[in-house]
Structure formats: structure tokens, C-alpha cells
Image (cartoon, rainbow, N blue to C red; front, side, top):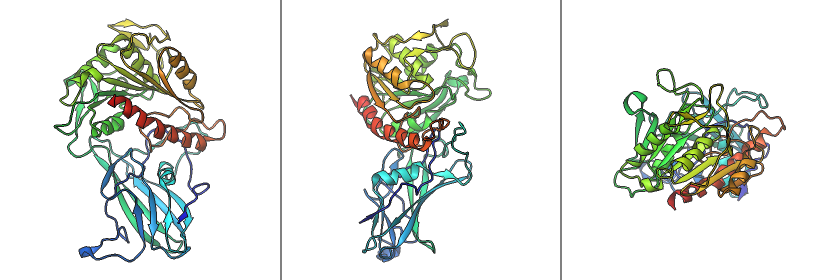
Length: 417
């Protein structure tokens, strides 16, 4: 069976955040999207195939895409496209050649690579230091999004197929939290009713501010873990939260953790905090200073030290209103496991060195030598551009994806322990 070669055929970019990736499920398409057609009649034309069945799949699941009944040895292009929250189309293509029997296989690795490299029609130039990313509608408003696949020759499209990528599984719920009503800003996601109690997860980002962990929290809830994506600064006009990492009190995170632990499907004794970049500092402080509330700590692209305020201020973090000094972060009172995930090609700061420092003080580490700063959270998303100073932005982007694909199952295993 002929395989598509990805090298040189997909436009490459690195960017912060998310991009679509195909899961094992799919929805019905047109132009030969499956074997069963109108009235159960068998279709005989070209068709795209997806290993693992039909329907929808969670957005963190991989897929294996192929095609059949193509013209023998035809040179074809496989394309993937999706619209973001602003209606802009993102697209990537890969070229290949069918075998003598008209079959073509992309393979799981290349299928995911195709989709993690989708770009808008007009996109920032590599090496500018800017970041940009694919964002569908937030899970609280758009529980899933669609990816359109097509395969065709230079002359015409031969087959299409639509896949549905889910953030929130059927029955999972969302509630927006506000400072006015809940004394918290963020999104609370719960698994479907009746699920067994599992480790709840408090998710928060770094210096980008805002509600950066909302997609991750939705996926965790779909996997049975009550999850809260917490915004602690830059939460929007009128949010009641500060616009800087300045005197952010651990009491705020603790309030969120306690609310999360009260959810029906939560096992509060297993509560885990998941912090990215600057948020890794808060995650470690919580594990150290709130061991009765927090069991496990997942620190992505971490710092092993508390750093100063950002962009200005008195101190980044506080506890009961008292400023916490900058300096090394202790881990000797953490009740559970600290897992540090770092990239050796991190151009924002030395997260790999910090992960090693943390491991020397009892943490577990996952190090990815070629990955950059965007090793965080679930796989098959689009990692961030880091300026391209080494001329290898695309290589770092792909390495970030590999790091996510490797680390995410290990994080999920930790949550089940």
C-alpha cells in the first residue's frame, strides 16, 4: 500500500495553542465518504478511510487516514481544513501516490502531522517571534468542531469526509465562573452524571494570562475528571482580576481547588494542579504549601524558582496576603507526585534545567531534548513559535508535538493512580 511522504509537502509553522488533529472517529461526508450510501447501497467510487470506526472522537485522540478505490498509481493530494472561531479557514496538504490497486495509506503519525501543521491562507512569517494559533470556539460554547478531509488529483476532488472532534463528551457539562458570583474566574467542567469519582484537576496557564487551560479542562472532564480552568490575571475588563502577575495569592487557587473537590465525581484526596510556564511556579507552591488540599503537581515548561512579578509589581505570588520571595521552590512537603515536563530547546527559559533541578529534589521528570517551550497539555495541538533564532522553527514545532503525544498518556496515568 502506497504511503504519503510528508517531508516537504506540508507547510510548516510553530505557534502557541491549539490546532486540529483527527481522531479515530468520523462523521459522514460526501463524494465517497464511506462504503454505505443512500438507502444502504454500496458506493463504488473513491473513498477516504479512517481506522477505528465511525462517529466522533475526543480531540486528543490520533487517527490513521487513508484512501481506497483511487485510480491506480494516481498522484493525489490529501487536504485537511477547518474554520476557526472567526470563520477563517486553516488548511494543510500532503501529496502521495496510490498503489497499483488504488490504495493509499497516510499512517497515524503522518495523519496527525498533516493536521497539526494547518495554517490560515495568510499567516505570519516564520522567525518573526510572533505567536499565532488555531482556536475553534471555546468548549463552553462549541462542544466540538469539524475537520474536512479531501483527496483528489490536480483535475478534481475524488472524495471528502468530515470528522467531528469533541472537547466535551456527551453528558459532560460546563459552567462559567465569575468573580462576582463565585469569587473565581474560569470554566468548570464536569463529567457525565453517575461516573465514578476520580482525581479532579485544576488547570492554569502562564504569562499569557486569560483562561488558557479551558480546552484541556474540557478534555479531562470528558475522560471522567472534574476539571477547572482557572484565570488568575488578565481575565478581561470587569472581571475583577488583576492585569499582572503581582501578589497573586495562593488563597485564590485554594478557593478554586476546594470548589473543584466538592463536585459529585471528584475524589478530593487526589486533587491535582496542572500549571504551565509561570503557572508552574504557582503549582509547585500549592503542592508545597497546601498539601492537605493538593496531592499531585504537573509542571509544564517549569521554573524551579519563583520569579519576580510580571510585567511589574511587588512580588509575583503571595500567601494569606504576604508577599512570597523569589528564589528556589521547595518540594519536600508535597503529599503526592511532582511531574516536571521540559524541552531542551526551550528559548523562553531553561525549563529542562529546571526539571532536572526539580528531579534532584524528588520530582519525576520527562525531558524532550528537541522540544521547545510549548510541551504543555494534550497532543495534536499546534505548539508555539519561539522566534526561529536557530532557523528550525518547524523542527521545534514537530518536537513539541511529539513531546505532547508522549507525555499526555503519562499524565493521564498519574491522574488514575
